[in-house]
Every structure is written in C-alpha cells, then in structure tokens.
Image 1 (cartoon, one colour):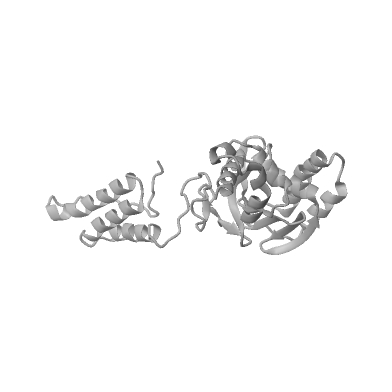
Image 2 (cartoon, rainbow, N blue to C red):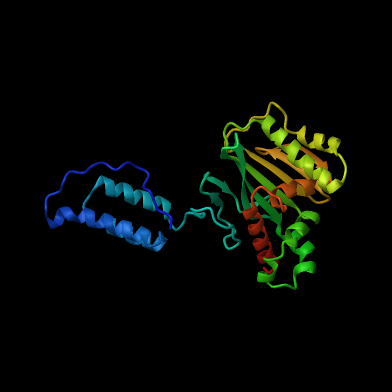
Length: 295
C-alpha cells in the first residue's frame, strides 16, 4: 500500500494543556491519517476534510485541508500514483510514471490509444542503472480492429492476452502507431541518442533485412542533428503512418519522414519486440490489444 506524504515540514508543537478543546485538532488529524490509510479513496478523503473543517482554526490543519482539496477533487483527472499496468478503462486520464513524474496522454494524433508504457534504462560503468527516458506505445483503434480482428477476433479476451503473436502482427501490419519518448535524464545529448539508435536500430535492420542497411540507417539517424537540445521533459515521437511512412518529431517539430517497412519494423521491435527495453510494456500491449479487439 502506498503511503501519502504531506509536502511540508513538521514543526515540533508545544505540549497542549489537558482539556477536551485542545485535544480536538489532534483527534481530527488522526481521523485524516486513518481515512487515508484505509485506502486513499475520494470518499475517505472527503470524510477527512469534514473532520478538519469541524476543528478549531489551525494553520497546520488548514494546510492539510488545502492539500486534500487540491489532490482529491472529483473534477480533477487522476492517474495511478504507482507504476502499474495501463488500462483502457479510462480513455481520458493521462497515465503517470510515478518514479519520474512523466505523464503520458491517453490519446495522441486524435485516434491513437495508449497501449503500454516502458522505461529505457542504461547502466553507468556497469554499476548503476539510470532512467534515460520513459516511452509510451500507441496504436490507432480503427486500424487495429481492421487488421487484427480477422485473425484474432474469434478468441476470448483471456485467450488473446496469452498470444504473443499479437505484438508481431501489430508491428508487421499497416497500422498507424506512435512511440512517444519522454526524456528523463537531463544531461542526455543528441549525440548519445544518435549513437544509441545507430547501434540498436542498425542491428535490427540487419536482423529483419538480412543485409547491411547503412544508407537507410544514416537517413534516419541524420535527422538527429547536433544543434538539437534535449533537456528533461523533451519529447521525441516516432510515428508510423499508412504505407509504412515513418515521421520523426522532436518537441512538436518534424525532423523528417522516411518510407520503409523495414525501418518501421526495426524501430517498433526496440519497444515491443521479444528483446525490448521493458518487457512489462509488452505485457500491457498484449492485454490492451486483447481488450481493444473486443470493444
């Protein structure tokens, strides 16, 4: 169970006199703690707020009340506070990676739905893994149903969730997709990104193409020009359009487009292939594809 930490420091209060009146703030704060510990639901938080408002005026309790009101408002969209599975249950709320604070919209490019989130980590001197970027995998609803329903529509959701070939068919078919990279490591250089793609995509171009594709690889990596800066929070999108056209954008600016089924397949394999950066993202994609085919 997650614990909720209040975003301010605790001061050492003076010992209050023994009276029913002076004990009231303490009892109200205990009510808050119990309500939040019981599950952190909106109902429990609302009960805690009521208990606070019935207490004598106290700056500390007012701070608690303001915090709860701002974070548990019924009109506020909430994403999961923990690193959990992406679900199609809520199609509007963004999903946040709690360890980094990076939020992924549930829909991009109007029709592409978030299917899974992963993390790209890198070992430093073989000792410590750092979070380089978080990534979200999106696919177009209509394209998924059109291309995959005939092959997989006859299976139940539970059966589909066990079929790893769903990911392979997603990568192979002419389905509009986007991989959205959100930079976590603030000192990441464009040179490092380019070098990493040269190695990882280069090996996959050879794997799926059967021969050296230096020219195709150079066309892709040359889009990541030296003058581009990638501060923390920068967004790189690699989007496959119909006819296997790959669009590369950085912070909303298009860097270029390349038509190549081989290149699209190689890039998607980095993120949802059998040897992807984060296998949890693979499981989320399989589960949500299964749910999407039965909607």
